[in-house]
Every structure is written in C-alpha cells, then in structure tokens.
Image 1 (spheres, protein in one colour):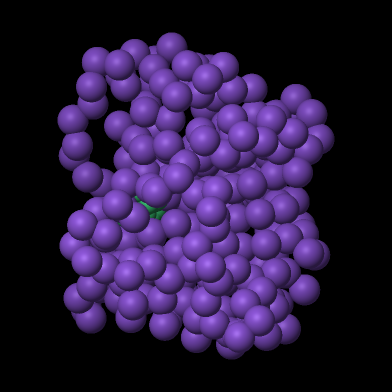
Image 2 (spheres, rainbow, N blue to C red):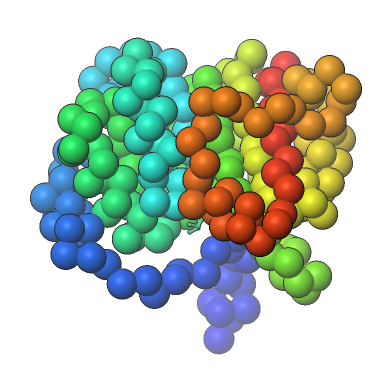
Length: 228
Ligand SMILES: C[S@@+](CC[C@H](N)C(=O)[O-])C[C@H]1O[C@@H](n2cnc3c(N)ncnc32)[C@H](O)[C@@H]1O
C-alpha cells in the first residue's frame, strides 16, 4: 500500500496498443543492435554509439518517424530516442533497419529516470520534446513533463550552448512551457528574438501528433531555448 502511495507521478500511462508482427520481430531481432537497457548507471555514450559525435536526445518520439528522418539526414550526428510505448519503439527499429542507420539508439524506459540516472551531466547537444502529452484536465496537469524540476534536469544534461526544442499543439501547455522555461533565466536563453515562439522548423517532417492536431484545427507552437 505504501509503495502505491509513494509512486512517482509519471508523464505517461502505458497504452496497450497492439504490436504488429513487424514491430514484434524488430524488437526481438534489432534490440541487441539499437536498444539501451535501463540500469541506474551512467552510460558512456561514446561507447554506446561507437564514436564521439554531436548528440540529440528525443523524448517521447512516438512512432519514431521524425527521429529516423533526422538520423538519415544527419549521419554526422547521433540520435538517442526514449519512448515507453513499445509498438512505437518497434516501429523506430524497423525504420532504423530499413534505412541502415548506424547513428540511432533507443530506450523504452521512463525518460525522466533515464535522464537522471543514465545521462551524464553536460553530455547532450540537443534535446527534442515534440507534442508531449498535454494532459488537458486540470487535475492531470501534475503529469505534464514540462515543469520546473524537469527543466532543471534537462538543463543539467545539456552542454553549454546546447539547445532544447519543444513543440505543442495545445495553446495552454505552450504558455506553460514559455512560462516555466522563461523563469529559468539563469539556465536558458529563449532563441526567439521576440521572447516567445520560433518559426516551425522546415526540416521537421510532421509527426503523427502534429498531423492529428492539424486535423483537429489546432495551432502549433514551437520553442527553442539555449543552455547558458
Ligand atoms: C502525444 S505523444 C507524441 C509522440 C510524438 N512526439 C509525436 O509528435 O507524434 C507523447 C509520447 O510521449 C511518450 N512519453 C510520455 N512521457 C514519457 C516518458 N516519461 N518517457 C518516455 N516516453 C514518454 C508517450 O508514450 C507518447 O508516445
């Protein structure tokens, strides 16, 4: 009972989505090549990727189409994706295999714990959080990822000059992101000259949730903050 009461508030609930045969096979066969197991120990990322290159971490990559597109377009960079939804991870692995990507690795564990326990301070060049679950209902706002403790955690893992890019299709969450990151003025500078939103990056292939938002008539708010 105590254990239940002390459960951390997570930014996700495990969705039960069915795995396709291809995703199941990809997880079984490709995990040894691309998967990073969770353990509460700092990873040597140069060893994980087999080289030292600029590193992007994407949190909550969904089905991984965006991550795979970036990794294909930028073979000179390394991409670490974290996603708890296993069918999405299977999908990313299929894309990694099809595109013969050597610069992708993935974890299926809670990104908050991975960042805290496995990612060394000042070891990332870029962090992406695209269309995170907005947790619309007020009583669920505590589950939102973008809150002051998480901002401090991400800041500690980015190197000086590293950039955190975020996007959402939920206006009120966009305002929260701007407020929380804006309040971390000793850690981050807003790259928007007007101090608010960035243009939508042309390079971003629309993600599944970005397309869904567009179908529902939502806007898109992009943010980018640089680590001081
Ligand atoms: C609304 S979806 C957006 C997916 C994708 N970025 C897109 O734009 O299509 C948010 C995703 O974040 C994942 N997620 C939420 N919290 C997470 C966490 N703490 N660690 C890993 N993944 C998380 C969820 O499983 C979900 O797939």
